[in-house]
Image 1 (tube, rainbow, N blue to C red):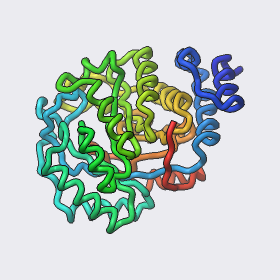
Image 2: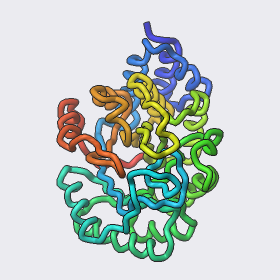
Image 3: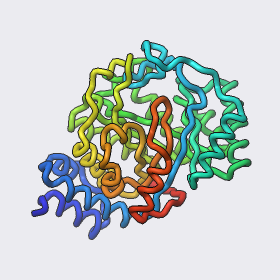
Length: 332
């Protein structure tokens, strides 16, 4: 028997074609574990109705690894913690281009350059603009960038330089943020998101679940993600890294992960909802279920400092599910 909250959500999203209220989302978050498959099935139906059947595939490259001045407690790239990840300089153009070509060969449409920095200085901005033009010109890929906190002027400069999408995650809710980061504020992240959208780039703004936040704080985060109006929302699950303060956390369970994938799809029916870090240890053999719980994009290959599964496994999964690969563009 389908839970009343799920029936109500289906009527709102599919018949009335309206977004769910905060009260409806709270009711969905509270449904019994036995109802999670029904919740996931509705999320998949909503994804098809609001966002279509296509799946976007993206490759990411850690173009500048380690040595970051910020103290994000989940991140092994922070200079504040003694982790196995050590600082390395920005990759040279040949290394970046080789990675981009490999990404294009997999059928991806998006390639993201990620830098472990608080934000770019003039030298880094010049280098990024050079690399963006090179990758786009040589491979035809859409080029995304993740380089921390931006000024308004930097956002407009990156947009003019051809950056298609800029990633800047909220990660967690405002009320939990200080438990995870102390070297910059939640408001600074929100302001960067605003600059990105004002400059005309697509905003990629994701979440990291399983850091010790409550259900109420996850619902709070959904509202805050809605407020910054992203095109794309990567869903990350904490993979506790050695040497970080959050190494003490246990990975989220698979059923809980499916519940929250579905919740983010139902709350954000038209966004690009991307499988990101931690899915391999959280979902294990249930990764295909996530693709039928609202996901319509994935990072293929490795992440920044952790290994993903082989690209062939993900491409085979999409083929098994008859999910076509295509570039996407959406907004809530």
